[in-house]
Image (cartoon, each protein chain N blue to C red):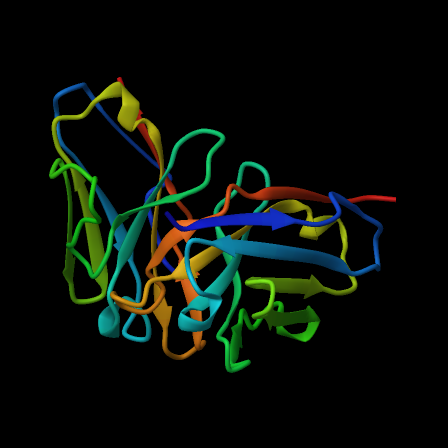
Length: 120
Length: 110
């Protein structure tokens, strides 16, 4: 069974960089697109970006200038960095897998999510 | 402001059927497939429908999906109290080169 688990600091200071890692088990990270999504409390889902093993990425235009994504095949992990954070970046952050057997943006497996709070 | 538009809430009685709409444009739903996700309170979203109308293994056939033009629709029949959740549509937007979601619809089973 495919499992994804987010990890990283739960509290980040304003203007600093938010860093999260998603560890994948039950599937090779080399064969899929991997996605980051966030959800502020009481609000809807926001697509952040996706990355493939080749390094190819797509980002939400509204976040593109602050987002960096990477993949570590040796650890079967992928990561997100969001720079210059503000309180508006406080949210539950999810990692997910894009299905290889369905249309674009079919997210078939999700992590449980991790709450990241931006506060001094 | 979400790229895809969903009603904020819908409600129906147990055993009844409800539909949830998802409206987009030619750059997203009009030229791509729609997925639907169920988010139970306090949990991560779960894939419910993909490729407009297909169900992953384990999803009961009470859940159905369809697409017409630039809109997608999720149908849930034989409503149960356990179906109370937030439902999100999603797709790819070819103009943005990014994934997009609807704002979500809260289903209440009265």
